[in-house]
Image 1 (cartoon, one colour):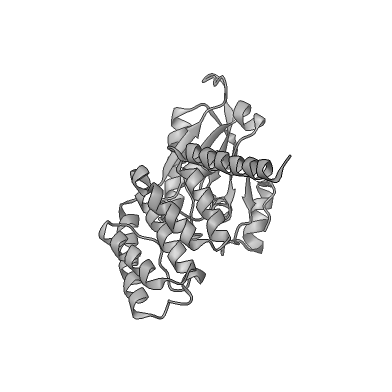
Image 2: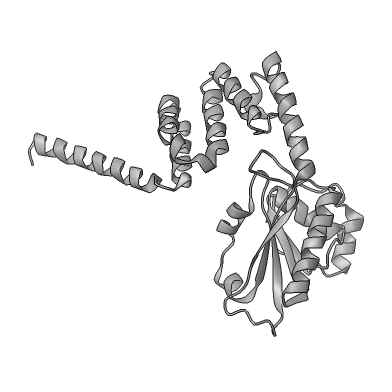
Length: 284
């Protein structure tokens, strides 16, 4: 093969790659976010901004996420004034981003007057949203669900800064799909406009989980002696919190990289052991 033919083949492959990416993008914002993550990781900030500019009109339902990506890219590129402008415009739309001065991404600008102003407005919007928000559930029934048969229940709690949608995409197995009723719960506690999280010692979250559990038991055929609760990170923390405080009757719990609830101590651990409560692999 000649040099010209090799170059032509390479150009053809590059063109096909671009066409493939363009086709994948159509109606799929997840593909956009994956590409943005790659560009951000490679410090290709100008290319990331160009991509955002090119797709913004195609995803009106993802306007907040796009806004957040703009601010994140500008922040990493140390173009702080542009990040400030994005946040200011977002606040006018009612968006909030969790602009907390103690969070690592904002370390270099935390003490500036502009960021302090923005963080105060952000907290105001977030607090108002949390007051109106509520915890919600999604139920996945096993294949060939039979209401005359009782099923074990798995309660899955998402991690911090996550959603039911993301949690549902992770928890699948042949056994779950065939033998369990699965209840995914999304916290009322906003991280930002679109993502949520948990906090230990939260009576409102405990009450929400109790009420959602009661709803599911009332509407589906569940073996209440076979209830397992668990989650990732902040969700794992909340699962242990529910177990320690006997919020609902559970047979066991799991936690993947959870923090340690303040209520977990020698006395409560002994109480859980006496109740034969199973720990299905909590680890940090």
